[in-house]
Length: 612
Image (tube, rainbow, N blue to C red; front, side, top):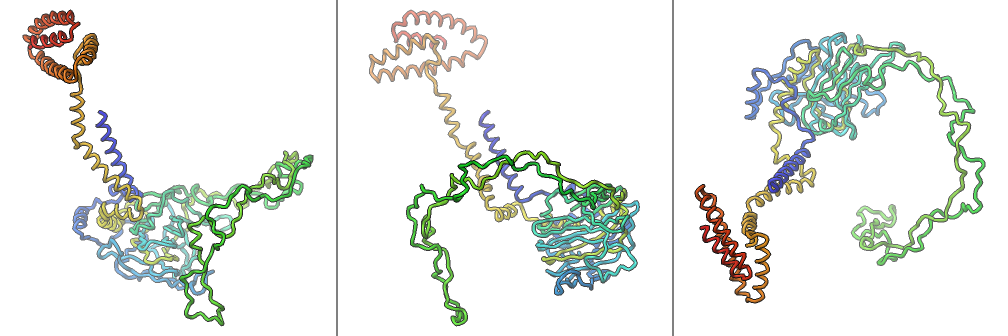
């Protein structure tokens, strides 16, 4: 059983290594079967068959149900969209204008024939564009669903791809849309540095003072980096329900959810009590838990002088130290620039570089012993600390009722909005937006996604590189994977050699043949034969001893054949009983003549012959 367990362990290790390599290629594989897309249309199988041969039957999706806004950009025009013509406040004049460029284009990769999107084209510019809803959205009993697609085609350095739902008002002018235009909700991805975010911010009105505060939903707990770096089209969805709950989804998978009452920062409702702003800490209030011991006296032998570091007197200059070599030397390969003017620039000197002689030596320049802590240094004496008998604890002002306290138990009823806008700053161009929809039914949004983003996802999956290319790409980014690949490839070869090499069979045959005459003798016979061999070896020469060993081998072969013949039939068993009686008589004769070594061997031969 042990060899079987051995090769099973090798196979298990091979599978484990392959799993690790695959995990390095993809941080998390997408589940194509359970992605939540409604692909049960009658044309679904036809679409898949076209995808398999490289053709995509794309048609501009048409919204159904109660829809407040939808946009596909497939007509190539931006007639319903308004570019901002205002200036950004608190910005330098040369970049304050919203002059970023927008275009309708196809995707760079995994494109669908006839599918266009809105693309941000400028870098280091402010962009602002907006469009009116078909009708204002009023927060009543139906949920709010906002959904759109984003593709960072060239990655993203610093910038966002979020949208703003602009608050409804009679004087809303989209040409004056800027960063301080009132909005109800802001939702979408944003990135700066290595901070990857998915914003959900809503403006909440304080009914007491009439001011608006921004409430930020708690950040998703998953790593969002891949959605910014994989250059794929991702679907962002926000769902607000009348029970004051929310969900944020990416590619129809929930990445964040919570309550508008509890899971926002800062808290929705203010505290009932606040610190009294008019109360001040008394001057005599003592917050010190420990104070210096006034009765302590500095010891007479306390020496506050002396340095805290001294030279190590036991240190020895390393052998090979170059005392005469400086740490820096002029660069011998440097040349004076052609436009160098000594009258204006002064005498030219070559730049200094590290002395190459110092690299192979323990050090250069004048050697000085290293510094160590001074064992005699005690520093400035300070009295020890003791418990403060007058300690009163940390002072806190008293609590008073919050004059601005309110309790909003239904924050879902936000300010109505009547326009959607993109107001962005980006250091990366070619950010792709597509297929906006604002509705009240999840089924409508899912059907819209299946007719648009679902096809993009299928095309992207069909164009994914094969496993070999993925392994090579992963190894280019992580060179240590080459060692893992080699080890994984070597394991099957080792297993093949282990199973096919004939050495094991030969060893088993040798083990089967490794026995002596003693295996067939009783203990008393074994002891007697051993003594006889020793005695006979002393009297006979080497040749006689070898002949005796050969006789024993012949007798063993006869014994093996006889044991097989005894199992044939019942008649043989009856005859065997008669033979055994004769054999017993012969055994007695052999025992009586045990004083002679030849008699033992003859008696054994007689037993074998009579059995035959």
